[in-house]
Amino acid sequence: MYKLSRAWSPAFPHLIRVPTSLRSTSSKSHSGPTYQGRRWPVTQAKTKIAQNILHMNVGDGEHSYAKNSLLQEIVISKTKPILEDTIKEMFSGANLTMPTFTVAELGCSSGPNTLLSISYIIDAICRICQEKNIKKAPDFQVFLNDLPRNDFNKVFESLPDFLEKHKKEKGGLMGSCFISGHPSSFYEILFPSNTLHFVHSSYSIHWLSKIPDGLVNKGNVYMAKNSPPHVFQAYLKQYQKDFFLFLSLRAKEMVSHGRMFLTFIGRTMINPSVSRDCCYFWEVLTKSLFELIDEGLVEEADIDSFNVPMYTPHEEEVREIVKMEGSFTIEKLEMFQINNDPRDDVNNTSFIFNETEVGNNAAEYVRSAVEPLLASHFGASVMDSLFAKYAKLLGENWCFEKAKNTIMVLSLKKRNFKV
Image (cartoon, rainbow, N blue to C red):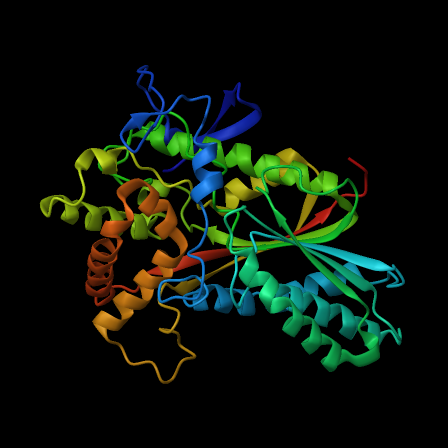
């Protein structure tokens, strides 16, 4: 049976729970991680890598995030009822006479989904105003946040049409709407204290602030079935530190009783070494990379020195960190699964299975999200070959079992005290 035991971490001065079966018994210390063939000092902690190259494919080309973000759009649409319920609960028994409602969208990316959740939030608040016979909704102050390499220019180009659409639909009910970009990591303080009423983030906080320190994960690019115990420990420890920090920072920025609505990739099984929804896509990608070794395009050492700065948590891990940090109560935590080819959906009656097409669709979705990260390490010249192999393997495996992402939806309420 998979059990959790408590361990003390000096770097994370709170009791954290580490899976017993994944605790390393080796006393061997690991030197810092490598990057593009050179050893990085642990003090640099790979934060620079995450900050500079962790972004979606920009523009609107064939492999861009803007053209390959249908899956994220479906996730946002599926979570819309929970988002609306969160906003309704926020204003139950409260007045809406505040002059300005301040919202932060963290990890906004660029493309058709950037303003989709903001649109849902504005719609919900305006609808509540109508139901309460309030003639004018509050003004909206919207902060769009992502890392500096995000394609903010494309986001700004879409703003006039977005604002015009809402003014036309809502007429005099709609107040002013001020939207600005805020390029920075959400693992840093972003806004003044007690200013945010609502924080939203979709498909972002499973990304870590950096690659965990001291990883020796030969033959893998992420946690895998054959990864040594210290790898699982390192990833969990980094996630615990990052998510704890994320909550602490947002608690400072949010008003009392403010709401935070987070959607991210999770996993169904507490033990990541046996959780298919945790590691499957990265294991297939690793296999694709190894096929490039035979063609002389990639060296095995390059694979051994690459690790993905991502963690897909289990529900129990999320609940534990929220409880330990202490600034929020969990109003709702739900999970659902979605096929990694979003077109292969029970509601899509026109979908006809085609191995090649399904593989290509799933591969393009992954490529749009991680190509900059992969290209910075393995080189841009091998990306076409890599994702051609990746698409083929995904399509072949799809014939036996559909690949799915587990989506976690977390609605939080800030406690009634100032930080």
